[in-house]
Image (cartoon, rainbow, N blue to C red):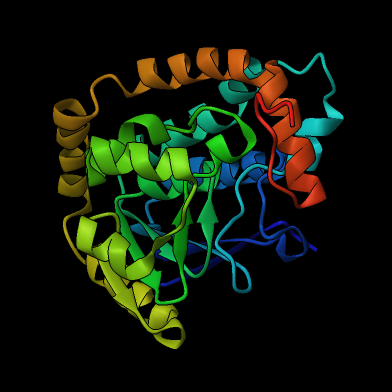
Length: 260
């Protein structure tokens, strides 16, 4: 079964994360497939807008923790990010075509960074957003440390990163995290409608607009992604992270610095 589904209708390319048995969690192969598809779309003049969504009822649970655990003690979080999410986030921002995330359900961790890097986000009423990283004693990566505060403010970003509480679709709309919220059964049609409208527009001008937005609002994105990796390298080898992952897999509250 393909882990990334690709479907082009007219000038709209729909890319669907397709690991429903793993809540569409990203692994190395899925990230590579998504990067390849985006690079091909960037070169293809017949693709004028792009939709990104998840199969089933989940957008994505973020990074596949089992894959990270398989890396063992020698895993470099910095090198992992340099090879995966950093180029993916940069690609989403630099591709000179509009990209819309159709957030069909829960969106957590690294997938939040992926969704935030898209130009527009249309969410199902069943969607929610969880920063996720602090939940297993990691720091935000995948551009979340820059993009989330930029959209909802530093105070809210800090609160929902520290607490790891979900942000509902309605709250995400009120705070500017998403552009629209629609009933679950209308998500595909609504996102396709918006993508089709954009595909009929001045795509060259959209690309130049993205350049201008990136220059004005995200001029240090590449630097931030690199620094996130350096910070994550520290967090990933901290005993807190080991306890966080163990507690997550055992479905219990982690015990950080608690002796009793």
